[in-house]
Image (cartoon, rainbow, N blue to C red; front, side, top):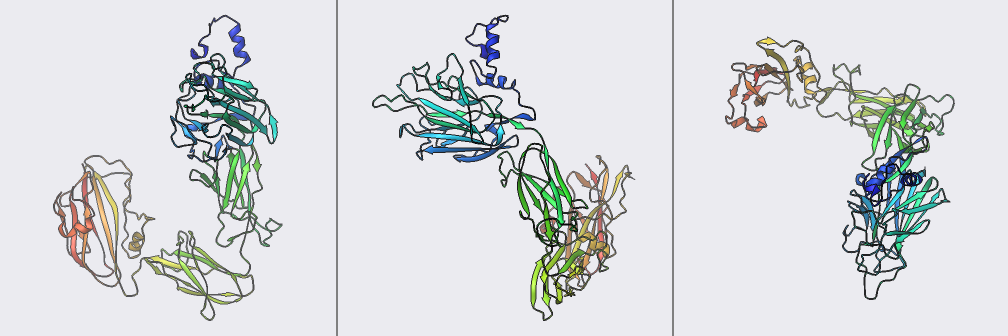
Length: 635
């Protein structure tokens, strides 16, 4: 508190100073800006609101953008700069912020050593021009501490004039709100000429031009009531220049961090997703909710604007009745988006697939409906799935295959339409006239069909549905010509400590790898690749780990000159005489660390720092399965 009482005689038991502090608790008397912040912490906000501060140092302020919006505690706040005449905003020598006419720059300035918003005017070009910063809040807000204007002063003592002048006005939804400007008091170089106008002091109060590390030129604006808009007009004061002289200081002012009382009540957004059978955009009696429909809520980032890279999202699904809700939301702008299911692709409600809303403090916005429907006319479709057991029907656990092309033809073979499956493997043709149709699926690569690839479907009346046209595919594709694919799966099949199996882990079960179809194909071919994908228990130095590489020559033709290579993992050493090979006549070899890889270099995929297990070249008949197994010791 020493700086606050600078130049004053402080008597702990005296009453005069205490009375002064109580009379103006929000206005610092003297010293650095840190005193203002200490006073601001004592201020309180109305019930239902909390303090929120826009720190210029944390904003994504765009250089020289005269119209930007930021979020202060859930309140969308717009900053718009206008200049009269055009090009009037400019930074004069010494050009502290260089060519930037309007932007956030680091301190010190006005006694604060943190970033602030700064702009200048070109006093050498037109003394009658001005620049205006308009701050607009999306809803009425209270400012619990003064708005701080930085460096409202005059030129240095060796010059006759340049005078900063600011005029501050405020309104609440168009109604004028009284503004009171105050300087720091004794020693200030800013002069209050009327309630809402301040300019560099006349006669000059030394030093005239306030040093950047002092707040002698700062002015504090207080507002009698909540506001929705603040306007700060910056222009030169009435003092004339001396003949043949130009102003030599920077002719700029600044605005410090802004604190408001932001509404603290949280609210919710939601309602119903329903089957709008008549397509009128509203839920009528008998139109049921649609369950398990995904919805996304988009929240703006610190800039307060939707549709920018710093947006964040929340997701939810409708319940069995089609209801959904996003809760515990602060006030502000939001976007609600729906992802319709494949069989109800059209959105009938007015906003389409996404609706932008503004949530007020504590508001429950339970009117955001989405109506879905199938387009008029007949429809044909259903499911393209991974048929893991190859029985030609979709069973529990059979997942959809995304991005598969399907073609619809009429009774004469002409193409009516094409489509692709969604991420869940679903597809739908809509708007069809009654008649006989066929659906043809394009076989995805690396799969073998377990159902016919062309199925017939009939539309018997203008709005009938035929939603059971499914196509199954088993992982693994031999190809019509008998081309053979080599499928390889690696598993951990044992772990030993002191030559005894480590307890708590089973290596005798098949664990599906969702990122690979090869293990499914090996299992279907009668070689179940049992073992662990990742070993969970802690492994100590000296423990042994067994690896098994399973393989399948998937097709009818023999694979010629096949080679295998598996590098010994880093941090381990090969266990002598542990290599075994099944299904290949060539029993393989172990290359010592750093030994040349020679013919295996192009398939080993790395350097031979710890050694390598290599097998081949070997000829493997089509349909042959087998494995390569070895152990390592943890270093």
